Amino acid sequence: MSTNFMNNTPTKSVDILVLYYSRNGATRHLAELIAEGIESVPGASARLRTVPAVSAVCEASESDIPDSGPPYVENKDLEQCAGLALGSPTRFGNMASAMKYFLDNTTQQWLSGALAGKPACVFTSTGSMHGGQESTLLSMMIPLFHHGMVMLGLPYSHPELMNTQTGGSPYGVTHFAKADGSAPISADERKLAIAQGQRLAQVALKLAQ
Image (tube, rainbow, N blue to C red; front, top):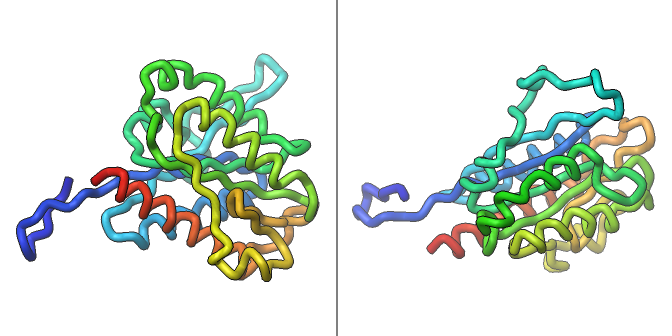
């Protein structure tokens, strides 16, 4: 709760978690644009977090702090957030194992209902145009439905959904990065990512009233 000193009336403020996994930077870039959209809405702030990679090699491990970028997510970030934007690159039409591993360990938050009733959206990036973008978005929605979250997509009132020649989906913003990750975020993808962040923030603020 913050105070508007012009009229001394309290106004709600919300902290929204933007949680992603990214190997080559494309999904991270989408996360940053979504965060930009969130923070363009008065009263909303974005908390960027990532997850460590997982490995089949038992001796392999990540450091406690990433070499660069946002810190690793903690379960308390889920408990404290007013909304969630969840992103992962596509792995054979599914979310990456690192994100799945983190979500598999949120049983306590499920039992306590920490996320129930909070708004959420999803986003992804693929190396090929038809590389399973929508199935990946749906795979990320499933555990969020189990947590009782209110899922948000992108309405076709955004003309970029009809005009895009790269990524874009009513289920959530997507990016076509090419196999080598060389394709930059397109103008349409950028607008959709910012719009998705704005929509998430606006709904979170309404639910917080």
